[in-house]
Image (cartoon, rainbow, N blue to C red; front, side, top):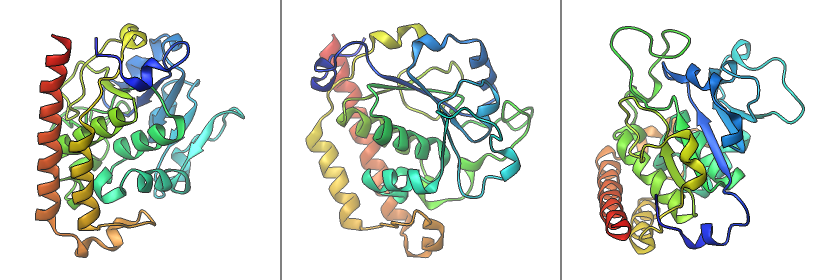
Length: 258
């Protein structure tokens, strides 16, 4: 169990748990899970097909109309660029967040829903060379494309975990498969017992300052229109800083819970 943070200590009642569901090969297993263990189910792209009780469906501008939910309840929200880009900008901008939907969705959920726990399933960002790549068959391994914002998926996940912890939210991975996410593994039934470990805020602020100094801001979110302006080596160096900060966070966490 993780140590109680100041944010969680002030939380009244049970923690607010958001489950984020991607389209990985095992994602359909969640169809049998008990919804009592979460407050909000946020689905990415086609994952709305797995179960009907999702709360928000997040997809990009180029997501085909025929793949979007046609029928939905009045309280089920469709989250598109006009909703998630402002949240990306709040947390540093898409170039630093990472231009793929798993991270886009996570930062939207962190800012809009303000959870105490974000638990991920079907978001491992690992794509086998043969067999199904997604629960519906074979899809495009979007995060593995050549993209200056996605040079290290592990670094982007490390950034997300640290930024979330800064806001009193623990990131966990419900998957048992190989994963590019660097979050601690967890069981669904244990989510109510999770408490967020306080990160080293000074270290986080130092890396964020490096991002701001580099200045790769694209308020529209359409970073691909400005990609020639970005230095891949400079962004790789920032990735290294996040990975080092994450490693130090893990060491500190082990010390605190020993």
